[in-house]
Image (cartoon, rainbow, N blue to C red; front, top):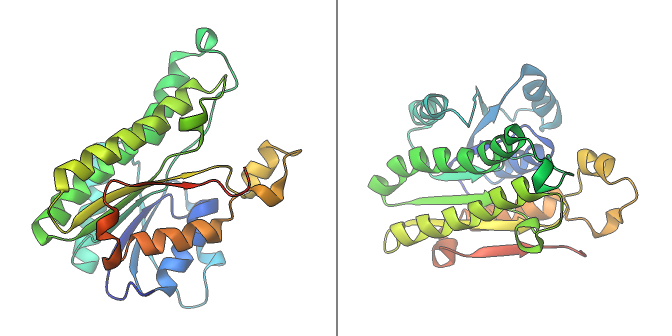
Length: 236
């Protein structure tokens, strides 16, 4: 599959999953803009990429609307369009019952996992709709379906990503734009192995597997997948 000439904005593209996705999208021919929060993330991404691969790196707070507007404007200035948006940014913080959950944790999980996806989609769509082409793929989680105890802020935020995706899909129906989401179980990264040291790592979903799905969802062929939520559960 090729994405030759397409422009992809990958939020969190310098993270554990993001490094693999960014590399795969560059290899598929896409022009890639990557968000990062600190210089060490950006340097780690560049070190992990094949020689000669050079995405556009933009230090961005994806929970801040002005920062997101700047992200999209700079991407268009550099590459001429925004064709693909991958909402990979997210985070997990829980392990406490609802009655003991600090409001700060609640707000952080909603902001990082849901508001970020809303803001990036909002400003990507302003470019995608007029050009009659776009693919928005957001990352939800199996947690949104399982609703495990002591994970309410994260589970609610990831369930919100599904609702947001379906709302966007309904609004762009009949255009060349499509919105989808994936629901991974546990992604096999160093961070998740550290978080769940006794878990069966062989059943985790590999970043490479997720990247391959994201590439297909970003192609011309995926128009009919508008509104779909894909379960990527691996062996869990």
